[in-house]
Image (cartoon, rainbow, N blue to C red; front, side, top):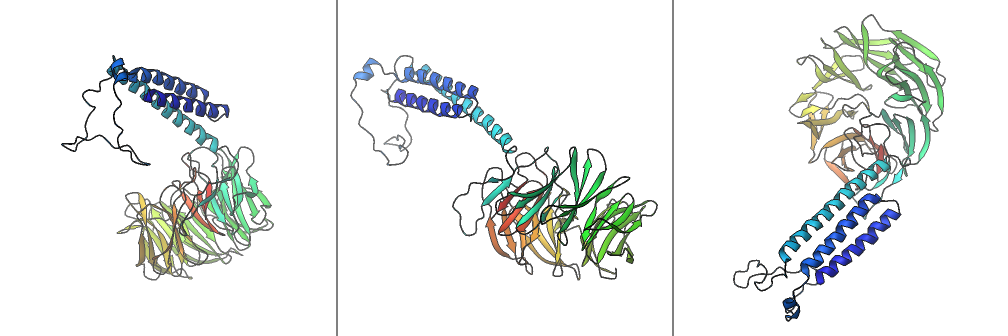
Length: 516
């Protein structure tokens, strides 16, 4: 009767547990009923299987075995061989015992299988519910060591799977994320939405300047399968839209918008235009030549860089941001269609990737007069170097430039696992950091150290000395449901910690989460 008592207790506990979950609306009632029915059947079969025969009922009780306090019961062993022994020869079950035990095992297995299926179904329901919750959710945290970071909050993703985020701006106590449904600023401490610029009905955010200057950034909206044709200037202190312009023709050239000082520079409708960031008033324009296209654009308060390709030849142009006057032009070593990005405006560093497999695939550096200074191939002994020109483009991490170094990720066998720094004087490798995990992004800390996002799940952050690449600090990411790195994350140092923004999500990843 010992097994029957345990089975009855298991059924009672399961019934109360499942009933409470069903009454609370947490579990599907169909699965609860099925599990209960199967457990009840298992109880009946188990009772029949272990009911003793009259002979067994009158036999004297066996001496109790030594018990292990707070541990599993020891297995029977053969006193002569020391190996595990089977049941005693005189301990046969009652009539029909063997078949009943087999039946009990089968029914119990079915009960466990049903419970497992229910758990999977309930888990899917929970995942679907997570994406529909409010803007920010506080994540549960456990005790941690001084070098362990917790997930403080997360924001559910929006849109369909594989939708690309547009970009993000670190703003100190807040951060702004460009999502499909608009521009949203989160408090870096708790993830609360401080302000937002929602996209109009049936329009999505389609472009965003890589940086802000003087507290102003640019975003653009567009309709499905239509040009990215509505340009807005947003004040990042409070989300106020300073002005809005409708762009003609084919609208904005992909990724070709930037803010330099108080000037907004865009490539649109076959023209490069500059406007006041405060009023939207046009300051200058530069029409493109016949057959010419802008491959990349970025600006600072003094200098605007353009990579222009006219047919097969390409050149790099430096313009005065305030007036549009050309300062210098430099022909690029390009003879086929090329992708390009501006990595840094000052010092001048661009990345070029030709369609010709034997063409130019490299970082190219120039001095302030346009003279070439350094070439770093995108492929070589270190692997394939990341060369994306802006955040959120879904291709690769934007490299860092500073202190005479170019710092970027390197991947081998399609998985980035190194951070490599190259000298901008001679192109030689200055240092490398080899990770045991996948590396996903790099960023500059306020104190100048290089932050590396690596690992899986919520990830971990490794801080490197910028001069040597040696590890200064390693912060292990906390574990929380829904806080995980996607296939295109961006790491943003903010006040009091870091925020990971996922620009592409596969299903359960949040739009953003904070590690601190």
